[in-house]
Amino acid sequence: MKASAEKRAPWILLAPFLILFLFTFVMPILMAISQSFTMIEREGLFGEEGISTSFAWFENYRLALADGAFVASIGRMFLFGIVQVPIMITLATVLALMLESASARWPGFFRAAYFMPYGVPGVLATILWSFLYVPGLSPIVDTAHSWFGLELDFLSSGTVLWSIANIVTWSYTGYNMLIIIAQLKSIPGDLYEAARVDGAGPLRTALTIQLPLIRPALVLTTVFSIIGTLQLFAEPQLLQQVSPAIDSQYTPNLSAYTTAFQYNDYTVAAAQAVLIALVAFLLSFTFLRLTNRSSR
Image 1: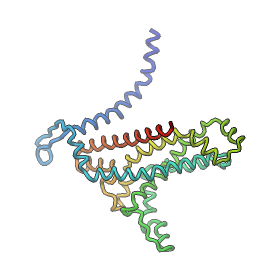
Image 2 (image 1 turned 30 degrees about the vertical axis):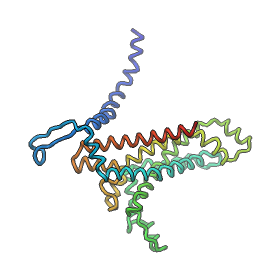
Image 3 (image 1 turned 180 degrees about the horizontal axis):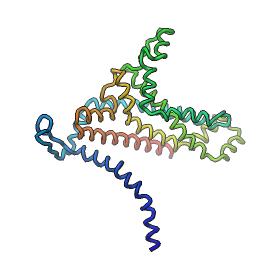
Image 4 (image 1 turned 60 degrees about the horizontal axis):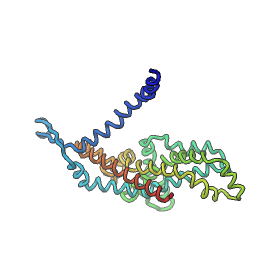
């Protein structure tokens, strides 16, 4: 009797989390997949004469992939990730190494300062940066024009993607930095002592000891960043109000949102959401395979 009670105890303690996980994570995913294989037919102008559903096979996926704007948004985010993710991870790594060096002063203060942008919600961060992008409001644009004669346009079709990249980099560099710092703190002090005995300077210590040992943190932050790239939503949606270069399908998430809530085509939007998840999985899986192969 006592043994059976001990076996049940962990499941009783886990039950609230498992129930919450089931209803807030598993079920929405299953419903999205189910809707992506469903065709809804409305009779009458607004469906007032009845609504019928049927199994659509891959028709919704065909419609999603036939939407050139949606496919273009995935390609746009692929370009975004190729440029922005390496810059952000490199910057986070450099900051982490500098703050964990023996000569760093006030590391706690600077860790908090660099992490602070992550505490600003994405909506507020975009609003704050938009004041630095909009001509007439931006001191950067006005100073460049009046002092140097330069016509800066951070919201044009050729630059607005990188303006969004700047906001994302500002917001998440400190977050990734803390993950890398946590990995740096797990490195045994004996290795640093041995490096000092061998006459290794800060640069050699970073290249031969720190960077190889923080590899798991670098892989983790890169995977998180790849997934986050395909989830961009708030930044382009808000900048859409001040930049005509951003349309309603500028990013994959924005495209799925537009399909669902502007075109009322929830089944195709569900197919788009599933495709976004598959692309994120394939990119993350490919990156992990490449990193694992290079480490052998």
